[in-house]
Image (cartoon, rainbow, N blue to C red):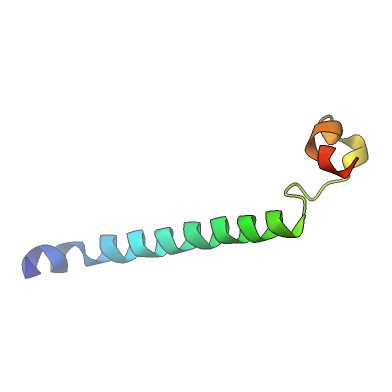
Length: 58
C-alpha cells in the first residue's frame, strides 16, 4: 500500500486540488445566485435571453 501511495502521490494531490477548486467555484456560484448577481456580467439590453433571465424582476 505504501508503495502504491508513493507511486501515485502526485495524482492524489492533483485530484484533491481539482476537487477543492471545483467546490470553491460551485460555492461562489451559489453565493452569487443567492445575492441576485448575474452570472454573465454582460449588458442585458443586447442579450437575446434578457426577458427570460431576469423574469422574476418584472
